[in-house]
Length: 144
Image 1 (tube, rainbow, N blue to C red):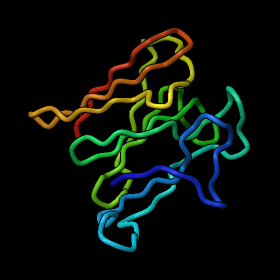
Image 2: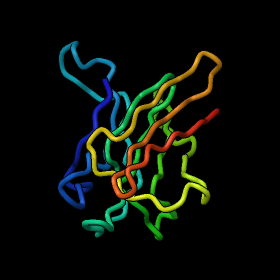
Image 3: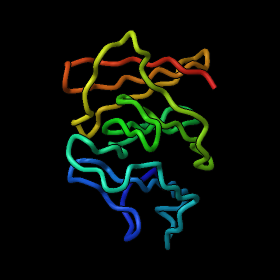
């Protein structure tokens, strides 16, 4: 089972995002639970409202977790539409996805489950991300 949540050290910067803490628990139904791994996804501390840049949710596809962020962050070097990619087996960060400049202006991710990821039979991953400012659906293609 994969979970997103907060800790005392890592909390939401505003009300809508999921939280920066992600974990995997392979024994969740077998007595006392202990996470297989726990990570803190990058997020901009002290950000609020439309300046928020933190995890908005996640989806698991194949061997990876795809974690969209609410907005951009200069300090993190994230553009709006940023998706962090982590290995599902150990939580290690393996890359990210961002829209190219030819996509044009995009807005924040305001929907709780704004991302859907899918692994194709040929090993390619597709991620669709909904944004609210220009009502765009962004589709990313990725291979690791």
